[in-house]
Image (cartoon, rainbow, N blue to C red; front, side):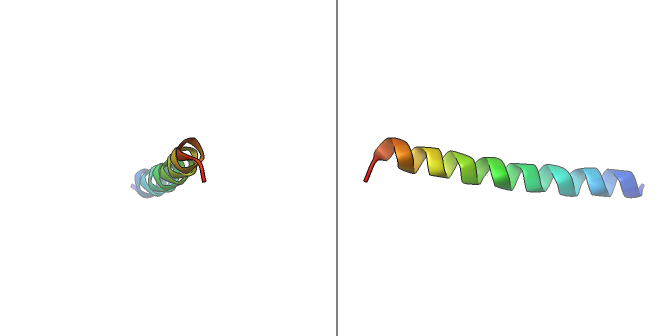
Length: 32
């Protein structure tokens, strides 16, 4: 029960972090 909720929360955080990293990389590739 609780473990599933915690796992989902962790996955959501990981997704957010991955999206932020991808955004930073995209901006870096695009250049100034």
